Image (cartoon, rainbow, N blue to C red):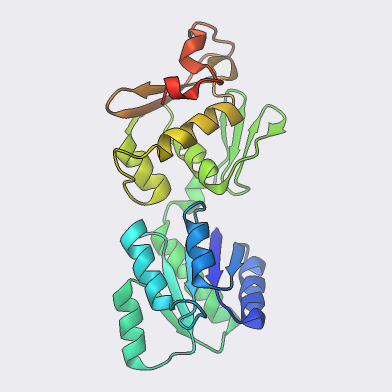
Length: 249
C-alpha cells in the first residue's frame, strides 16, 4: 500500500518511513503540509500518517482539507505528541480515523496501520491478483502495466485510472463513478481532468483492438472498456486514433 507521511522532524520522518517500508508498504515523506497537499492533487495514497504540529499549517487543517476534498478515503492516522483528551477528540472529530501518541512504538504503528487498511480495503487481498487481458499485464502490487514486454511509464493517478478500467472490463461506467473511484470525489462537469487522463492512457498504453482491448466514449454517460479478440482490426482507426484523443474524450 502507498502511504504518505507528513512529519517535519527529519529523524521521526525517517523512522516512520523505515517502519512502514519494513512492513511491506511504500512510504513517501513530506516535511510540511503545503508540499503534501500539492502532491495529493496529482498522486493517490492508500493511507495518510499526519503530525499535528507542522511549520506551515496544522495537521488538523490538513485532515479537514482532505476530508472536504477527498471524501471518506484515504484513511488518516494522527501521529503526534499532543496527548490531551481534547486534542484526541478534536483530531477524530476533524475526520481522522485513528490517533496515536508519540513516542513512536514500532509494533503499535504497524498494527494501527494494518487495522486501518484492513477496515478500509477489505478486498485488498483479492484485488492484488495480476490481471491479464490481450497484450496487457496489470500488477496491482507492483503498480505496473506492461504492454507486451514493455512497462508503461505512468503517474500514480494514471495507474489508478488504468487499474480501475481493467478491473471493470466490459462494464459501462459513468464519469461520476470513475471520478469517485480514482480521485475520491466528483470533479465537476466543466473539468477536463478525466478526459485528459483518458487521453494519456490511450497513448501510453496503446489502447487499441489489435492489443486486445477497446475503450469507447459513451455520450453523456461515461466509458466502456472491453476486451476484443486478438488481432481484431474491425474497429475504424478514427475511433482510437492515438494522436487525436480528444475525438473520443
